[in-house]
Length: 465
Ligand SMILES: *Cc1c(COP(=O)(O)O)cnc(C)c1O
Image (tube, rainbow, N blue to C red; front, side, top):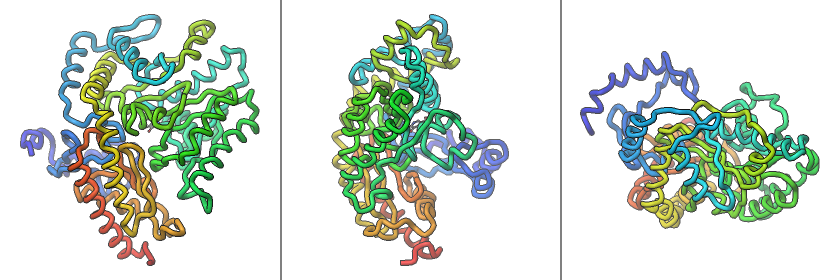
């Protein structure tokens, strides 16, 4: 442990108290922040982070699914410093631009599949999806089809936390906190076989869920539907890996009707599923892609909406002014850092590393399925989940849904690994640079945590078996 970093900040108890007094944390319970307090993370390197007490924790979530190249890459800091000295800020409104944003847009156009060749930049996945809502509606209006306004999304989808992105997402517990009543959105089922599949095979269930898209388009009328948006693999919803039948049928429906397909690649993009984009892994041909997180490996906030030639040409010819933009759209420092991140991903073949490691990762993660508390495992590239259950055969939920996942999540850092609970699913999404030995360490810590979770749940009467 580097003593210098410990000496650089206030003692932990002071930090925790001041944090509770002055910091409103996102997705956190204010009462718990005051009573239990928060863990203070002070530094990180590779796949490990360190808290203010010097505990070393393997970051099984790559931050929030974003630190794809791992921590501690000083090249990004150097680039940020140079860019700040040369041009710390200028905007990209009103026909001005700058070299970093031009280079980054060009690089993204090269990396993304098909004719996705044009990027509108934002600062977060949320605001990029807000952009997408306006983009697709403006597109259809420009095409002379102003009634095509509705965007179809999925239950339990996560598309961000702005008012519009919350409403676009499918999380009911978020909708009721100030995001109800946004017009022109509709939702269909998610392909979550474990919970919804009943007696059907996963393949049949995938088709059933996909068929809901066609039914919804017909119910609303094709002339009223602008787009369908989905994550290739739902991330924050619990790493819902779709049955193999799902995406081909969704793609067929999108092709058969005149609606745009938006792939929210905020998590899946930049190597997570073993290809540069989840759209490649699942054979999806989107008209628009949302990118963020892995675009900069989280080192700077930046996002983008990557759009196809067809959409960009319409905008260029008849769209007129697009009255939309953020002060920091294409921020030069964020753009320069993202570009350096992409250089590292490419030159160090980190996406190939993720693909090559994925069978090993899958084998180890699958072994967690032998634990009596685990019902199924779900894996795509280097992202995964395990579904906790009291009964694998009946796929029953726990008597108090979410209670066991929470116990697991709280114990895991004590065993040196950070994982995330989505109700009673445990999600994993490590930095893509993780090694076999680090995967072993992660899985061993997860197994130990499962044991302790089972013990604690029994002691608290939450497991009646
Ligand atoms: C994280 C996430 C977002 C929101 O990104 P922010 O940068 O947190 O606003 C949107 N879509 C998906 C799929 C995400 O995982």
